[in-house]
Length: 355
Ligand SMILES: *Cc1c(COP(=O)(O)O)cnc(C)c1O
Image (cartoon, rainbow, N blue to C red; front, top):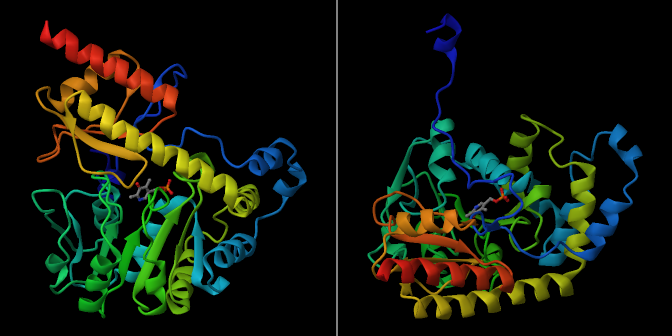
């Protein structure tokens, strides 16, 4: 071991879904949106004045915060923007989870949470989901240093109601409660209205899934103005210039085109609801989804087997070799054409197994 290596910080990093170089695959493994971003975003990028690159971007991200604030009916000082919601959540962990008590989140959830907790030395406890993968609010009535839950949860795709979040908020007035709404635009009801009643609530959103802009890296959160000010102080202590001016402008244009946004989300919801029915016909079961993916298992074939067989047929989905969910596949909702090819491949896999 080299001497300097003794001073290296040890982490077990988050493992993202594969981004294969091969363009010729059907990519249903990272919950990207199959449809293009708003037309105005495309226009902006095709005619972008590169002179803007000489200068630093606006460190306060004022234009985008203002646009999002107006969209959600809040004041600008209640919105924080970051480089994808991963950046937003990372800053939120650093800001609000600085106590000594354990931070709580579900055992089956977004796998990045334990990684940030470990990186920042935050004690945490993973609370088991119920047998049916639901989250029980009663499990969060215990001493804690904060709570984070995605709603809908990932990878289960299950949406809990507003009462569920309110129950948690009521029982935890001294903790920051973060609700990660990465998938809320696919038919779920947001807990945003609760912001008027609870100043310990932080609602986190991303442009990556519903706004078709994963590559642009924009995320944001909303909370009371004291919470957002606290996050801005932490951000300004790490890196003042997070979003590029291109991302800021593109983000504003995406928010402005609400008709396009709602139409694209509606298309995904429709394909998703059909997908659960078609997959049921092929022997798959899984919870009703409120996200842009489904979480399903087959009646006889193991999850890793289907995962590998799909890969051979150039279709990528997500699978985890973890207790409780090893037989499940998380399948992103693609375009109707991509889904058709998925069903054909699954049918082929199931038929060849029966021979
Ligand atoms: C995708 C995802 C994120 C991160 O998305 P960004 O691309 O970083 O905005 C955060 N939370 C959950 C639950 C997600 O699924």
